[in-house]
Amino acid sequence: DTGTNQTVGTVFGDVPLSDPYGSFSIADPDPWDLKTVEVLKGPQGTLFGATSLAGLIRYVPNAPELQQGSSRFSADWVSVKDGSAEPSFGAMVNAPIGDTIALRFAGSWQHKPGYIDFDNPARKKEDADDSYTRTGRVMALWQPSERFNVTAWHVRGGRQSEELSYLNNAQGEPARDDAPRNSPVDNRYTLSTLDARYEFDWASLVSVTGYQTKYAFNNTDTSYLVRPLAQLGIKSVQARREVDTSGWLQEL
Image 1 (spheres, rainbow, N blue to C red):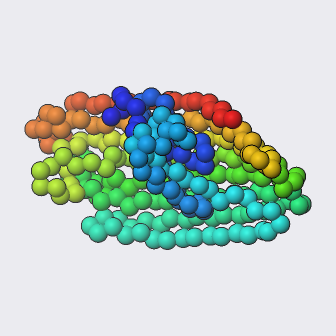
Image 2: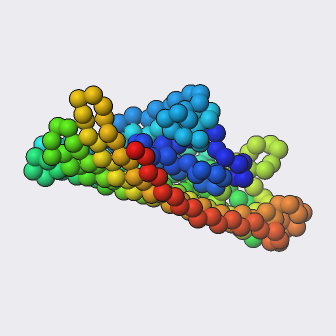
Image 3: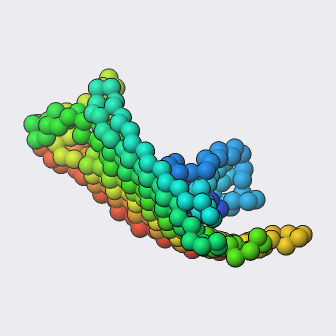
């Protein structure tokens, strides 16, 4: 529900992507070039805060590597039955600078196939709910000694589509005849983090600073509420929502 707190949290590294109140937009990082994706069941509030009452999904990125340059590229083609076929691409570059600094760049671009057909006097289009997902991040590591290191990164992602992927017919067929106009959706997020750690013989001192922004927009055609008119191609009701959120985190 968009008016209540989330019970399953989302964390990137050690920084929560969940809003403290109101799940207006849930960030969905692409798993490309991630070290692990952890699914933690049950209450996780002791380590990860109030938005993880029922569990947590934690995305752990690959860190920059010192003294070892590397790169990787991926491409695939996805086809959906009774839908379209679209490509996706991903790339990663790890670049060490001297003995104490390393940079890592990773990004992906996905064109997700659509499968819903619209057959209306005012609008005819096949596989109209295809979407574009873009994710990119840059990470920097400074490690002047074995005991001390600082990692900074900036992550940016989003999904855009000209159509919400939902159906409202009892037959469950991927087709609609009561949508005379499109229902665009645009979700975006950014995350900037500074992580500093010092290892004592008897303890670890950790400082994590994070800043996140999220943007959620959809303009939904709800003409189907007056279905006979909508099936004739007459536009009537429309529901619009636009939400910007931002927040700071400091953990010591």
